[in-house]
Image 1 (cartoon, rainbow, N blue to C red):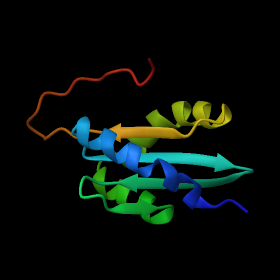
Image 2: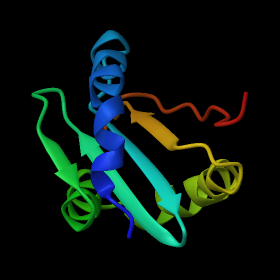
Image 3: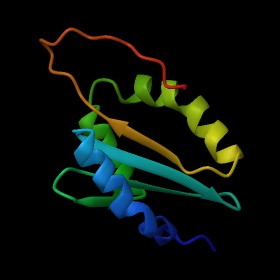
Length: 106
């Protein structure tokens, strides 16, 4: 049985990255023997796990959830297929801010 708390050892590292990069949140997805776990961390260090994390992500991306997830899934699937925890830090733009798309791949 997969234990989502397997991600716990990385939370401090991801939280420090969130702060130093001034992100609104960071989320990570992992897979083990077909079981998937997700964690989402906010700047106040609130931690959401699995379904709560997915629900919080959909709240943050209320108008763009489906589009954003569809853009991230290929990269996430590639990471998971290579036994890499897929980690995404997110900065959100205000509606008045000029938007610029950047590649998710190095």
